[in-house]
Image 1: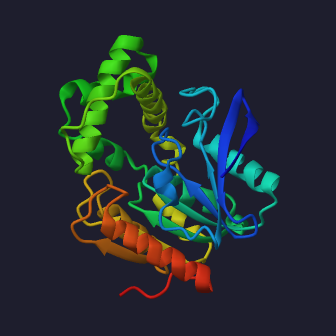
Image 2: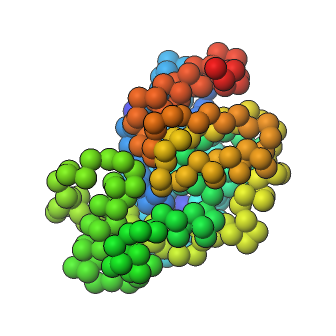
Amino acid sequence: MHTHALPVGGGHVLHVEEWGRADGLPALLLHGGPGSGCSPLLRRGFDLERYRLICPDQRGAGQSTPRGEIANNTTAKLLDDLWLLRRRLGIERWLVVGGSWGATLALAHALDQPEAVSALLLRNTFLARESDIQGFFSGAPQALARGWPTLPELDEEPARALALRWWGWERHRSGQPEDAPAPSGEALAALVDRYRVQAHYLRQGCGLQSPPLLERCAALPQVPVRLLHGAQDAVCPPLGAQALQAVVPWAELELLPGVGHDPAHPLLQDALQRALDAYAARGDFGELE
């Protein structure tokens, strides 16, 4: 692994991780959230003898500094950061891989810099529509359903309490075990920062509702696009992926039965690896079975 810091202006410095071969196929990994940061899970499925993986922690996320900062933190700024990162690394085009919010940012990046994208491999895509945002919080405890937009302005203790409610609801919607120990100490502080960034983005529609991202996707570059989506995803329901495929008819959609939003699900990981191996071998994602 190689890491480096990338100053991007506005007081932000991105933490960037690279894995694999320096001369491998370049692949940009975009984490979710917004605000989650890179994790080892994002590298699963990649043959590090074939790929060069680049994973930047987005503004305010992960090990980028200042963590949790929402000033000078917008989707437009993130897109500028990707241009700067690609230029700094001397990469002409890259495969872009992202899940959930990472898929959102991947689509926006392909629209912003179509010449930079050789293919899109997207998991459980989030389209940042108002219905997507409100749908996630539908049925949540009232303290969360009404209070999430206020998290960035809350004092420390109320912010921690709200972040824990959000964490519990997210696990519930994702189908993850709900009896896991609640984060505490530094892990809780990081969780508050993560949801601070996420609330900041969601309450302004991620800056992608005027015009709507989905409508804009008709102008995506005609490169290979593979959409992987859990058929039981309650965080980003599969109707969104089906709507995206209707706008991008050359995209291939693989709905995975019994799979929710969990990126570690074995069926999803198998589908990712098959697509990545095919792309490394011949530049497309192969035929769907």
